[in-house]
Amino acid sequence: MKEKRLFYLIFCLTIFLFFFSLTIGKVAIPFADIFDSTDEVTRNLVLNYRLPKSITTVLVGLSLPVAGFLLQELFKNPLAEPSVLGITSMSSLGVAIVVFLFALIGLDVWLNNPWILIFASFIGSLFALFLILLLANKVTSSASLVILGFMLSGITVAIIGLLQYFSTSEKIKTFLMWGFGSLSGLSWDQILVFALFVGIGLILSLFTLRGISALLLGEKYAQSVGINIKKIRLLILFSSAILTASATAFTGPIAFIGLAVPHICRSILKTGDMRMLFRWIVLSGVFVMLLFSIITDMFPFGTLPINIITSLFGAPIVISILLNHKYEVR
Image 1 (tube, helix red, strand yellow):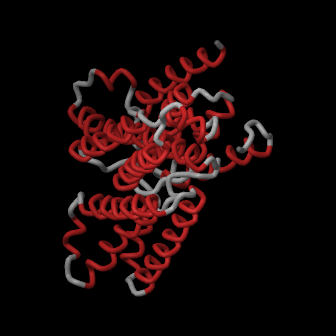
Image 2: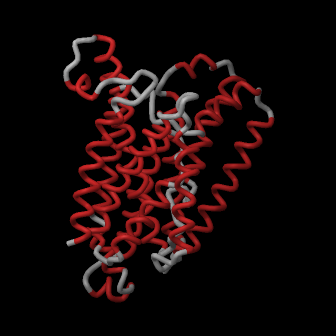
């Protein structure tokens, strides 16, 4: 009962934060003017800048925590997160190839296209997904798959470093700015595509919950109740990859959220009910991302990159949970 009241409280706070985020920025907008403003400039600011940013924030809050939750349950490792399989690093490689190599072959003008970095990032993520699914058929151990993901990340980082070494400072700055992550700047068309992929990832993830619950009691039990372990494993990998790839492609790599939000929810609930935990992670992810997004807009010197805020506030939360033993690492 206590958890249910807390859930509804967080739900109400999340709704409040969503609308409050529309009032925060370089130009403050009164709460009443969000819904009914006669000023054309205010309407344009809300509809074309702040509302898209808030919706983007919600989509990131939905995608990365769920991806982190699925991977932590698959690998039975609380330190697993969306970047563990090399998807984020391969996404970064796709962007690096466009930013650094396009200049060498005279295609710099393509960087003015708002879709080009999104497309490059998503192609990199899909390539990583293809490699993961290929390796998953050849590797039976989840631990081995994690190691292969780390090796893939290491190779990718090395290639990106090589591209940076031979590039100009201007292109390196462009790549670094993308790496900071950003929740703003998406058009409505881009948001619709982003929402489509997040929706697909979330629907697929719902089909994994029964299998995850059964696997908590062991693989033999899961097989005895009709769970196809190989199929569930592939479905978890695919859904988490889609969620991670879409978030990284549209907003850049965002740290902490996929790792910490499942930690926080487990520490509060201490439950083996995967459906309840899933609902909490979805809501808490949106709540935390909206809160962090508002914090980035409240600094007097301009909007801070979202990655700085998520790391500064997020890492201590995870450290404190682990040190206080609020939740037992499995």
